[in-house]
Amino acid sequence: MWLRLVLRTCEMGLDIEHSFTYNGDRLVCHLGTTGGEQMALSERRRTILSFIQRFSRENGYPPTVREIAEAAGISSTSVVNYHLNVLQEEGYIIRDREVARGLRVVDAQEGASTLSTIDIPLLGVISAGMPIPVPDVAYEQPAQDVIQLTRDIVSDSERLYALRVKGQSMIDALIGDGDIVVLRHQRDAENGDMVAIWLRDEKETTLKRLYREGDRVRLQPANLSMDPIYVPASNVEIQGKVVVVIRRDP
Image (cartoon, rainbow, N blue to C red):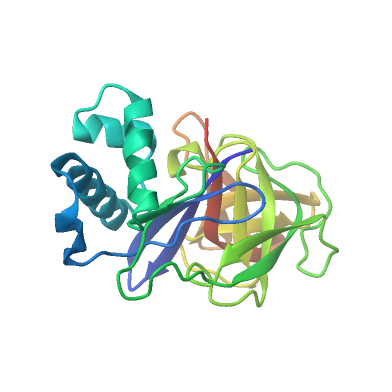
């Protein structure tokens, strides 16, 4: 199962999103830059390498082979793969062929150094739709599985846990059924934060954006076909804020 990871943070009012790829076993996406040595490349390979650098810098994740082909004006993905193989052999990039976007440009100063990983417990399922009765997603419950992230994405695993998404209510936030969200365990959140909500009376859980409106809370989906959910503030327990999204490739 190939997954695409999105790191979303909210700092100083900015919603920043970075994407990476994840193959269910380990994350592969450590971006770097090259120096003047790329001048020794052929024009086509300079074009490919420059596009990978620019695309990665602008989007936060590397391009697919098909995206490289379109940018370089190459009709065949096998030709792109040939050029990527040459770039790898010459030390300009590192590839992981088991990952859809398993590319990174080698930093000229740091070389092919790798980053250490940290384990995040995968605790269960959370609904991105109407709330569904599931076991409480309390941070303390035993992990069903573990996912690994590199420390350039999350600096430490303290209070982090992951849940698999069920439903399509957050699809406009690029979170679909089967994706994984990584949350930082906390009991409070700002309006507009995407959070895991435990509805005490119903014993149900849901993933929504939270908005406090007087003595009630609006749980807002990111799907134009779905209505918000309104619940008494006393019925809402925040169990974590989303900090990373791991998306499946179609």
